Amino acid sequence: MGTQGRLRSGSSRLRLHCGIQHSSGSLGLNWPSNWFVFLQGSLLMLRERIVRRAWVFAVLCCLSLGAVSAAEFPSFEQLPVRPEPPDPLVMLDGTPVRTRDDWFNKRRPELKALFEHYMYGKAPPPPDNLTATVVRTDEKCLDGKATLREVTIKFGPKSAPPINLLLIVPNGRKGPAPVFVGLNFCGNHTVLADPQVAMPPQWIYSSCVGVEKERATDKGRGTQKDVWCPDLLVERGYALATLYNADLDPDTPELTDGIHPHYLSAGQEKLGPNDWGTIRAWAWGVSRVVDYLVTRPDIDKTRICAVGHSRLGKTALFAAAFDERIALSVPHQSGTGGMAMNRGNDQETVERINKVFPHWFSDSFVPFGGNESKLPVDQHLLVALVAPRPLFDGEGDQDKWANFDNAMLSLKGADKVYKFLGGRGLVGSGLVSGDETFTDANCGDLVQYRRDEKHVLNRAYWQRILDFADRKLPASR
Ligand code: GTR
Image 1 (cartoon, rainbow, N blue to C red):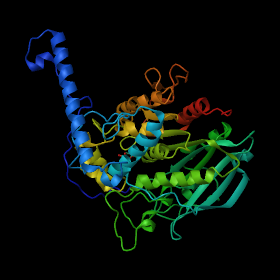
Image 2 (cartoon, rainbow, N blue to C red):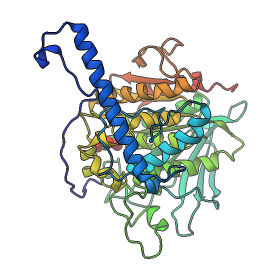
Image 3 (cartoon, rainbow, N blue to C red):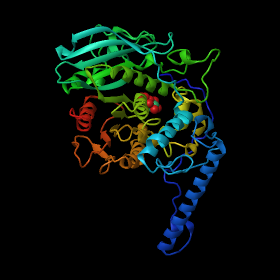
Image 4 (cartoon, rainbow, N blue to C red):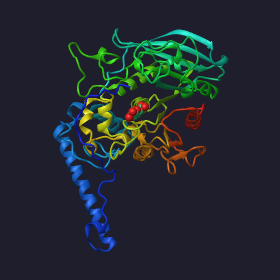
C-alpha cells in the first residue's frame, strides 16, 4: 500500500502530554503540601508566560502588521517548543478570541492556514468549471428500494482525471435524503454486488479482493458491501455517495498520477514544501462531490455527512474541518493525522507516518517528527474547526494503533470551542461503548463511540453511526 517511503531522519522521542510532573519527593524537599502546590503553580505560570512570550516574539518577528498570511508564518526553526497543546481560543500572536465573530472571521481562517502550511499542504481554490454527467441509472437497485447512479464529475484543467461517483438514493422517501459521502479503498464495484458498476482502470491496492497485477477484476464485485452497508443506509433513509480514492490520487508516493500533476505550473517537477499532500487532495475531492450533491433535488443539502475509515477517516475529518457544508462527520478509526493528538502519541508517531507514507502530508510536516511540541497546531484544533457541527469519533477497543485515548484528548481540547459557540460539545465522559444507547446524558455534539473491535468499519458501527445521525440531523431540521 504505497509504503516505499523516502527515509528521513529524526528521533522518536516521546513527549508527555501534560508537561512537567513533579512530586515533592522527587524535588527532595519536605515542604508542607500547600507550599509545594503554590510553588508548582508558580512554576507552571512562569513557564506558560515564557512560552507565550516566545510565541509572540516568533510570530511578531515573522508577521508584518495586519492579517496573518501563510507566507509569513514562522519557519520550523523559529517555532518555540510548546509542550502544552495550543489554546483554540488564543490567536497565534497571543490575542484572545472573545466573540463568535473573532472565531469565524479570525481564528478559524488562521487555523486553516496553519494546518495547510505546516501539515497537510495547500490545495488549489475550488474550480469554477465543475460539470457532472449521469452515465448510468438503475431505478431498481437493492430490490427496487433505491436508485443507483454513476456520475462522472469533471473539473479543473481539461487534462485532470474525473471523479467517478457512485450515488445510491432511497426510493421510498418523503423528501430529499440525507447523504453520507466517503472515499472507498477498493473501487465502486466492491460496494455492492452489481455486475455493471464501472471498475476503476487505474492502480489499486493489492490487498483488495480480486485484484490481479494491481488492477481490479470482476472477482472484487460486492466484496466491500459489509463495509459500506448500502442496504442498511437505504433502509434507514440515507443516501450513499462514494468514489475510489485513486480517482483523486492513487495512494503511492509517485507524483505522476492523480490530480497533482495537473495543477503543477509549467516546468514544475515536484511539489513545494507547503503544497497539498494526498490527504489534502482526497479531502479536496470530497468537497468537489459536495459541490455536485448540493445541486441535486433528491439530496438534502443541509444533511450532508462525511465518513471515512482510517486514512480515509483522516480525510473525512479534514474535509469537514474545511468545508462547512458538511453537516456531520464520522472520522472512523482515523488515528495519527486524524483524531489522535500528535503531542504525546505513543502509537503511530509523526516521524513514522511521514516515513512510511511520505506522500500523505506536505513536506513541511516532516521536521515535526520527534518535535511535536513545536507544532503550532494539533489535532484538537482540526476538530475545533468542525464546531459546532456534530462529530462521531468511531474507535475500536482492539485498535490501539489509532490511539483512541489521544483521540479523546482531541475531543476534550475541541470541546471548549463547541461550548464557546453555544453547542453541547462533550457530555459526561464523552465515551459511549458497545450496545449502550445514545441519550441526552451521554451524547453531545462530540462523542467517542467504541466497540470491542479491531481496525474495521462494519454493520455494527453503521447502526450506531446512523443512530447518531438520526439524533443530530433530524428530518425536520
Ligand atoms: C496504517 C497507518 C494508519 C492508518 C491505516 C489505514 O498503516 O499507519 O495511519 O491510516 O494504515 O489507513 O488503514
